[in-house]
Amino acid sequence: MRESVIRYYLDADILGLAKVLCPLRNDVTCPGDPGAVVHKRERPPCLIADTRTPDTAWLPVAAAQGWLVISRDRNIRENQAERRAVRESGVKMVALAGDDARTRWGQLEVVMTRWRRIEALADERGPFIYLASRHRMTRLDLGD
Image 1 (cartoon, one colour):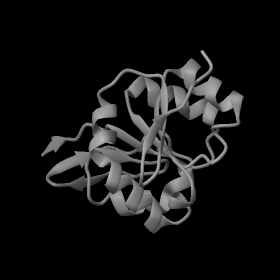
Image 2: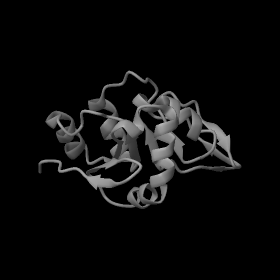
Image 3: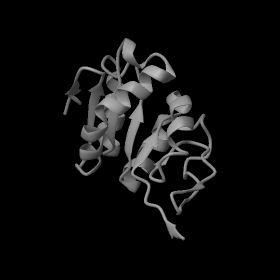
C-alpha cells in the first residue's frame, strides 16, 4: 500500500465537513485526523493533533507542508491580524464565505461547486486567500 500525499487541510471550524470528505479522499486531513486507508492509499495522522491549536501554530505547519487550507472564517475580511498571519506564514487558503457556508450541507455544496478551482489553487504558490461561495471565488487582498 502506498502512502497518500496530503494536499488539503480542513480547519477545525469545519470539522463536520472534514468528517464527510476525509473518508472519501486520501489527500484531505484535519486537526486530530488519526489517518486512514482510503482508495488503497494510507493517509498518515495529521501533524496538527489538537482542534484547539492556535492559528499562529498551525498556519506555519500547513504552509511548510504545502497544504491548501479550507476554512470558514467569517471575519477574515475584517481581521487584519489573521490576514497578516496568512501572509507571514505563506499559507494558501480558501475561506468558505457567506450564508452558503453556515451549515455542513452548505459548506459541502460550496466545496463541490468550486472543487475544480480549489484543485487548481493547490498547485499555486502562497500566500493567498480566496473567498468561496456557490456563485463566485474572489481573491482577498492580504494588505501586502
